[in-house]
Length: 287
Image (cartoon, rainbow, N blue to C red):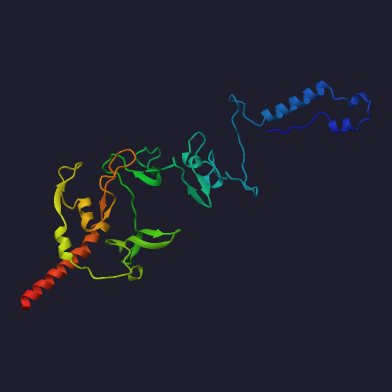
């Protein structure tokens, strides 16, 4: 690499007396300087390519420390690079932004997991569901594909959270969780008495239980799978809080936006109905 060095001392020319012939800048002198500049620039690149290919450039941060120490052809993401070797696309860096130490995904960002060249069927994607942002994971068509795997490395019976649900900024106020004791998994939802008001015993539970319509059925996508349960919209007529969604709702593209049920809400009603039935039996037996 070479640096540009002036051939003509223009400052000395400026100091000459007006009228001195040497004070005039000649065309040949200007040509010489332009040629020197061109030569200096050209020697900073390898002219083997049409536009030249960088040979060896050392990038430094604000303190002068090299950003590529021990790295060949790759500038780490942490140092402002793409994290990929020259010529390898790095969509994760280009598609989002780095803000306050956290990578923020854009609407088309993808974080691909799996083999060196993961297919579209094995990746996390930030997308939009009914115009609302959501994170999705495409498992692909392989029957051996795994979704989200949470591994517990602690040996022992102490309770540990695998997944927590909370309100507010992380870690927020947790109201539900999926926990493990090293052997079993518990799906817990908020039930602390300090979260509740207007607590009253359930009444007329037998009447409500009689209004339930349990049924057997098969699934359209799994015709050989015989199941038992409820139709969501019928269950909602008796226990509204056990059902999520509206009957016959559809997504923006016209596909089914299916209702969902949480059968844990049925248990208190069944328990209260059983207690009422036991009380009636005991009353008859005592008569």
